[in-house]
Image (cartoon, rainbow, N blue to C red; front, side):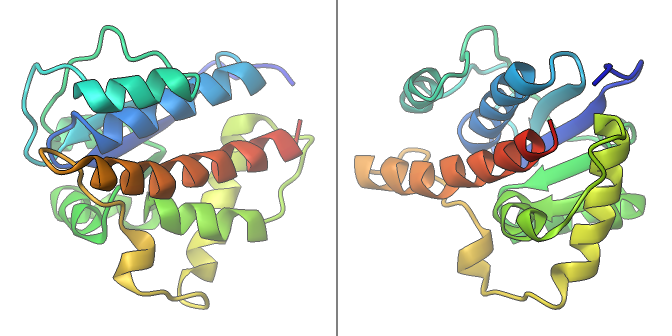
Length: 192
């Protein structure tokens, strides 16, 4: 499959932009680069970013263990300008999703929690003959149609914030986040 001239842009959003969203960003980018080099551009931001900070050290270790690269990261504050060019926004909690839509109401149909999209995307079929950007735009629309038919509790959509908490909470974050990223990557591999 040829790379399109404009990559499909995905933004991950959490609070401080040093734990959950950077992990999602770096694991998604690494996995998508292995499957479809140049076809995706994944970034992240925070609703209350610790601007200019690197990835939190515990999380950097997890990113590296799971095949991502934790180097050269700098947290940034979520702004309407960052949101305006995104094809898909992945919030790490429902509260983040609400904040994203407050900042950019036009993104309502392209904003999911990471775990929500991971649950819905495998139910969406796609055309393997189209490019990645077109396939994902159609998939996002398909997942949106399924959202109300497959409701869950907030606990099933949210990824816990581990910042300054126990090792057990960091492990819980990994158990919630990594399988969700894997589900998105598995869906893309299915059409290669």
